[in-house]
Image (tube, helix red, strand yellow):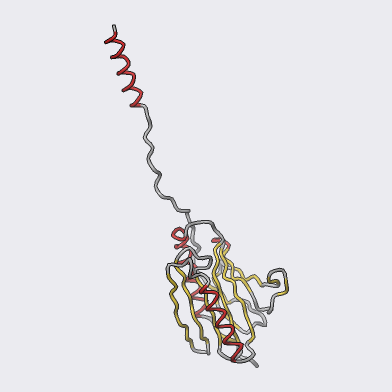
Length: 199
């Protein structure tokens, strides 16, 4: 009788082990992204001293305030990408003299450098275009708040600084395709950028 009870116990034990579900990790998932078809249109910049082409799926939003105060210059704007919850913030400054220019350039380097503690590396490229368009592009790889920053100047009168931000709590690897897509658009903005000549 004891052998039968023991045998039944063993059978029940084995049968209950067979019904156990095995936990397997889920595959890594990334958000599905729908990319718009590329196309560009001349940006309406009004009386501001620059012109460029922007993506048709972006919007220009003029900044009238800066930290709840009046923006230092009416030519500050955000180039927003609603499909990606992203924007490139552009700050424009009139250049008064060489010291003022060096101060703005130094500030641009400082802003890019603030991300170096979280960045894997910063790739810095010089921009030198016909029409007195000079500047630098800083591509910041890693979990930085802004993966791309830049500045443009004519070295005498104008200075424009830009910084890309994506509002999402997603790992940088997941955002990389969005950054790459927007970086191509920023490259088009820079390729078509020019200063308006004074009359």
